[in-house]
Length: 258
Ligand SMILES: [Zn+2]
Image (cartoon, rainbow, N blue to C red):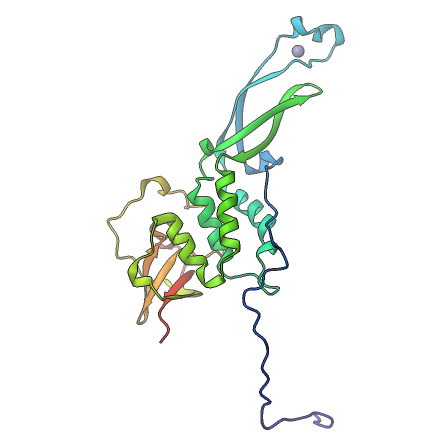
């Protein structure tokens, strides 16, 4: 190895770089999801088909074009897939200084969960006319407008307010002990995680995460005290995902900086 031509600087030059704080990618307004046409990947749809071929002349033509669709609805939602679709759509719009906020995917998932997109009864299924009678059209969450305005609100926040925003969305307020907290995303080991609220059951979300939570997403918000991480948000994710599953988990950590 030769050092010829290599400049070794003994004293670092102090350069003041202007800090661009949370500069979003020159987007003043978010472009929004309006509906999804690829419904079959998002869940399982059920409906009745009704035909009156005689009255509609299908037999003369030899092709049935009279199908009427009744009661089209989702029986099941693939929440991971729905999350992925939203995530793909919004991801780059939420870039800050050319990179993704570690909190954004978590916040998006919390917003979608809050508006119950995992629940098939919270979806609208449109029906439209096709060459062979009615067919399934686009689908969208019933709460899509609320999801959009929530994302608009998140978009204008500084990154450090992302987690408080979704906590407030879910619980209506921020725990006083979180006042002044900072947040980070860390990988922590199972034996450092403490769920103080063992008796707590939030029925609506029970079990929805068992095999249906995106890989690599933080599983909850935990407060760091000493060497341990105390659960603040994500009890059911803790039950469904943590107990006996893996050794390490990504979590959002709330901590006080001195
Ligand atoms: Zn027909």
